[in-house]
Length: 143
Image (cartoon, rainbow, N blue to C red; front, side, top):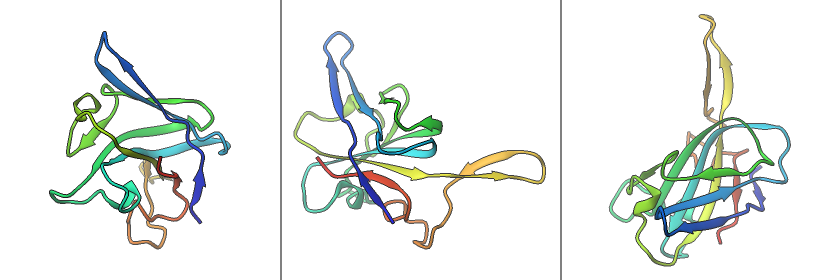
């Protein structure tokens, strides 16, 4: 079952460096987390931002950061230097305006291969590899 959690958002603007930064934490989660942390921005409230990221011209914005053994109570900074976005590549290039914001952690599982390598990947959890619907993912309420 998906858990809606409180996510702390701080949008920091630095005039000196013109860098947009988002700080995220999941204070209600325990342990270390692996996965893809997604920052979702939408210009409208027709649906949650996680349901408005599409493969077409009507898509809203998504920015991602891979997390490996992240202590969920520790604040994670999402900056232009450590995230990659679609359809806009960098956080610093987000056009000025009002946005609805949501964060989602698409959880990864750890696999130990026969060749000794360890990989972390998202498993299909019965949703057909739909990251925005996957059971067990952690996501915030849109703000």
